[in-house]
Image (tube, rainbow, N blue to C red; front, side, top):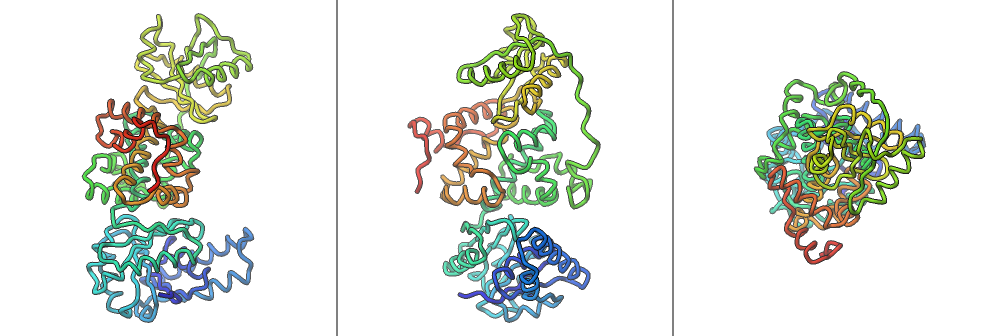
Length: 486
C-alpha cells in the first residue's frame, strides 16, 4: 500500500526524529503527545534538529520551513483516524504500549498499519492486543533518526507478508536501509550490542580494567565510534537495563542478566546523560603513579616478532636502552603472562604487552608485577606513541574479552537462520556506526584466531556462551577462511 499520511505518537527525542524523517520524505505527519507541555517539548526537538541541519548546510531555510509545515502537532489521538500508518515512540513499558495500541485499533481505519518503535519488547504481544494483528509490525529506528540509516522491520508469525514488504519499501523511500527480521528480543542490533555493553560493566566490576581504559581500548584499538561506557551513558542506563532484562527473560542466558553494577547505578538514579551522571560525570580520574624510567627488554612470541621489533625500535629511537638485566620486561602476550613471569629470576619486573591495532597497547599486570614495573611500562608505551590500557592477566585481556563473544553471538544468530550475514553486518554498521560488521571483522581477524580466543575465554570463565559456535569451530577445522553465504 501507499503511505502518504503518517501518525507518530510520542514526540521525545526519538519520536520527533521519526516525525522529521517522514516529513523530509514528503509525507504528511500528525504528531501526538499526551499534553500541551509535552507537545511544546516535541516542537522544540523538531525546531532544534532542523535548525542544526540548516546551520550545517544540510537544509536550505526554505526546506526547513517545508519540513516543519508538513507536521501537524496535536494532543488528540482522535486526529489519527484517517492516517495510513501510525508509529509509536512512547516509553519502553509493555503495558503502556498495549494500552495505546488498543486505543489506536479503535480509532484508526481497519487497513491502517500500526507500528511500534520498540527496541526489545515483544511485537507479538503488542499485536495480540489489537483486532488487526496481521497489520502490526515493528519499525525500529535508531537515534538520531534523521541521521542513522538503519530501520529494523519486525514481523510476527501473524503479520501479513505484504505488510512487511510494504514497510520495507517505505523505509527505502525514507532513505533508510531496512533489515527485516522476526520477533526475537533485541532483534539484531540490541541482541548483539547490549550483551557486549553489559560485559564491559562486568569486566570493570571484576577489576580487569578501568572505565576510561576500556573505553579507550575499544575506541582506539578497534575503531568503534564510542567506548562501551560512553555509549551506555548516551543510550541511558535504565534503557540498557530494561533491554537486558527482556533478553534474559527470553533466553535465561547468564550473560544477558544485567550486571550488578548497572543495576546499582539505575537504582541510584544515575542514568547517564539524561541525568548528568552515569558511568561518567563523577570524580576526575586518579593521577597515575609516577615511574622511574630505566632500561627495558622486549620479549617476542611466535607470530608477534615483527610487532615486538617495532616497539623496541620506537623505544630505542626515543633514547631508551634495552638490557640483559632490564628494569622492566615487556612480554608480547600470547597466553597468560604469569606463565612467562614465573620463569624470570624476578617475576615482579614482567608486564605483558598486547598490541591492538596501531594505537593501543594493553599492559597486563600479573599477581606478581610490581607497581614500579607497571608504571614504567605505561610510560614506555606512551613514549612509543601508543595509548596504554592497564589490565589484569585474564583471558582475552580487554579487547578480545569484549569483542570475541560479540562475534560469537553474531555467528550463532546467523546459524540459527534468524538473519543473513549481509543483514547482520549492515545492521551493526548502520545501526551502531561500526567501521565493519561482525562477519567482516571475523574474516579480517582470521576465524582460527577468534575460535582459539573463545576457547581461552571459556576455559577461564566457564561461561557457556563463550564456547565457540559450532559453525565457527567446523569452519576452522575445515580450514575455511570465509563464512558461506546462503
